[in-house]
Length: 112
Image: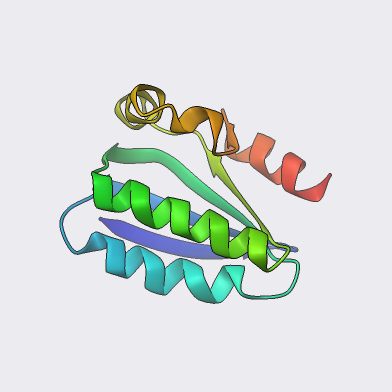
Protein backbone atom coordinates (compact mmCIF):
# COMPACT_ATOMS: atom_id res chain seq x y z
CA UNK A 1 0.00 0.00 0.00
CA UNK A 2 1.16 3.52 -0.73
CA UNK A 3 0.50 6.37 1.69
CA UNK A 4 0.94 10.01 0.75
CA UNK A 5 0.47 12.83 3.22
CA UNK A 6 -0.43 16.36 2.17
CA UNK A 7 -1.24 19.41 4.25
CA UNK A 8 -4.08 21.57 3.01
CA UNK A 9 -4.47 24.53 5.33
CA UNK A 10 -5.36 23.15 8.76
CA UNK A 11 -6.12 19.68 7.40
CA UNK A 12 -3.74 16.78 6.89
CA UNK A 13 -4.82 14.48 4.06
CA UNK A 14 -3.56 10.89 4.08
CA UNK A 15 -4.21 9.17 0.75
CA UNK A 16 -4.16 5.37 0.76
CA UNK A 17 -3.60 3.49 -2.51
CA UNK A 18 -3.35 -0.17 -3.43
CA UNK A 19 -3.84 -3.29 -1.34
CA UNK A 20 -3.60 -3.24 2.44
CA UNK A 21 -1.19 -6.11 3.10
CA UNK A 22 0.36 -7.67 6.17
CA UNK A 23 2.75 -5.15 7.69
CA UNK A 24 0.97 -2.11 6.26
CA UNK A 25 -0.69 -1.50 9.63
CA UNK A 26 2.71 -0.48 11.02
CA UNK A 27 3.31 1.88 8.10
CA UNK A 28 -0.16 3.39 8.59
CA UNK A 29 0.41 3.87 12.33
CA UNK A 30 3.79 5.52 11.70
CA UNK A 31 2.24 7.95 9.21
CA UNK A 32 -0.98 8.81 11.09
CA UNK A 33 0.22 8.96 14.69
CA UNK A 34 2.32 12.16 14.35
CA UNK A 35 -0.61 13.85 12.62
CA UNK A 36 -3.27 12.99 15.17
CA UNK A 37 -1.05 13.78 18.13
CA UNK A 38 -0.90 17.45 17.14
CA UNK A 39 -3.31 19.40 19.37
CA UNK A 40 -6.71 19.83 17.69
CA UNK A 41 -5.49 18.07 14.55
CA UNK A 42 -7.81 17.54 11.60
CA UNK A 43 -7.05 14.47 9.49
CA UNK A 44 -8.83 13.14 6.41
CA UNK A 45 -7.99 9.61 5.26
CA UNK A 46 -8.82 9.40 1.55
CA UNK A 47 -9.54 5.78 0.57
CA UNK A 48 -10.91 5.83 -2.98
CA UNK A 49 -7.81 4.06 -4.34
CA UNK A 50 -7.57 1.51 -1.51
CA UNK A 51 -8.51 -1.77 -3.15
CA UNK A 52 -8.78 -3.90 -0.02
CA UNK A 53 -8.27 -3.79 3.75
CA UNK A 54 -7.70 -6.53 6.30
CA UNK A 55 -8.52 -6.86 9.98
CA UNK A 56 -5.16 -5.36 10.97
CA UNK A 57 -5.93 -2.30 8.86
CA UNK A 58 -9.33 -1.95 10.50
CA UNK A 59 -7.73 -2.29 13.90
CA UNK A 60 -5.18 0.43 13.15
CA UNK A 61 -7.89 2.80 11.89
CA UNK A 62 -9.85 2.18 15.10
CA UNK A 63 -6.72 2.87 17.16
CA UNK A 64 -6.07 6.07 15.19
CA UNK A 65 -9.59 7.36 15.83
CA UNK A 66 -9.36 6.53 19.53
CA UNK A 67 -5.98 8.29 19.83
CA UNK A 68 -7.36 11.28 17.93
CA UNK A 69 -10.40 11.54 20.19
CA UNK A 70 -8.22 11.31 23.30
CA UNK A 71 -6.16 14.22 21.91
CA UNK A 72 -9.25 16.28 20.98
CA UNK A 73 -8.40 15.77 17.32
CA UNK A 74 -10.63 14.44 14.52
CA UNK A 75 -10.11 11.81 11.87
CA UNK A 76 -12.58 11.39 9.02
CA UNK A 77 -12.56 8.61 6.41
CA UNK A 78 -13.26 9.86 2.89
CA UNK A 79 -14.48 8.08 -0.24
CA UNK A 80 -13.79 4.45 0.64
CA UNK A 81 -13.72 2.14 -2.38
CA UNK A 82 -16.69 -0.18 -2.82
CA UNK A 83 -14.82 -3.16 -1.35
CA UNK A 84 -13.57 -1.21 1.67
CA UNK A 85 -17.02 0.28 2.30
CA UNK A 86 -18.45 -3.24 2.13
CA UNK A 87 -16.01 -4.32 4.84
CA UNK A 88 -17.09 -1.38 7.01
CA UNK A 89 -20.74 -2.32 6.49
CA UNK A 90 -20.29 -6.05 7.20
CA UNK A 91 -18.40 -5.27 10.40
CA UNK A 92 -20.85 -2.44 11.21
CA UNK A 93 -17.91 -0.09 11.62
CA UNK A 94 -19.65 2.27 9.20
CA UNK A 95 -21.73 3.25 12.25
CA UNK A 96 -18.64 3.93 14.35
CA UNK A 97 -16.30 5.76 11.95
CA UNK A 98 -17.14 9.14 10.50
CA UNK A 99 -17.27 8.24 6.80
CA UNK A 100 -18.10 10.73 4.04
CA UNK A 101 -18.43 10.15 0.29
CA UNK A 102 -15.76 12.59 -0.93
CA UNK A 103 -12.54 14.25 0.16
CA UNK A 104 -14.22 17.63 -0.19
CA UNK A 105 -16.98 16.50 2.19
CA UNK A 106 -14.30 15.38 4.66
CA UNK A 107 -12.58 18.77 4.50
CA UNK A 108 -15.89 20.55 5.00
CA UNK A 109 -16.77 18.33 7.97
CA UNK A 110 -13.35 18.81 9.57
CA UNK A 111 -13.58 22.60 9.30
CA UNK A 112 -17.16 22.80 10.66
